[in-house]
Length: 197
Image (cartoon, one colour):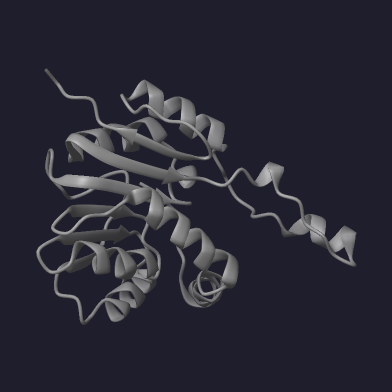
């Protein structure tokens, strides 16, 4: 079970950050990598306030389906409010470590800044592999914060800005994705589920 929660002030801070210019640019890059098509079934792991779910829904349309999960009740409330006019979007409180979906249920599964918080990365990747249909696509984005460069007039204060908590480095996610049948390259992982023939 994941213990990270975005509630109260933390949820409000996350929402403000999600609406910043840099994160809008990142959302566009992720959506481009997803290459969503009309009618596809898509699962977002760790959906936060529903920004990706809302935009992904525009691509798949009402003949498609977007399922978005998060462990934070406050984030799910925000995601549901954002997607309320889109009945083909389901925002549900659930843990990535135990997703409530069946085998081969999705054409696309993606996670942005979510898998790095998990204690059992291998278990999450097994679930992703299980939930993807053969030939399905996966996109995982995990920022390597150790490579981030911050500039500030207050260099000493800026050094404490990096996110706190337990992070699995992006290289660990990359290696684990290979172990679970995903071929990938680059900072965001792009891969296809191997067929079980």
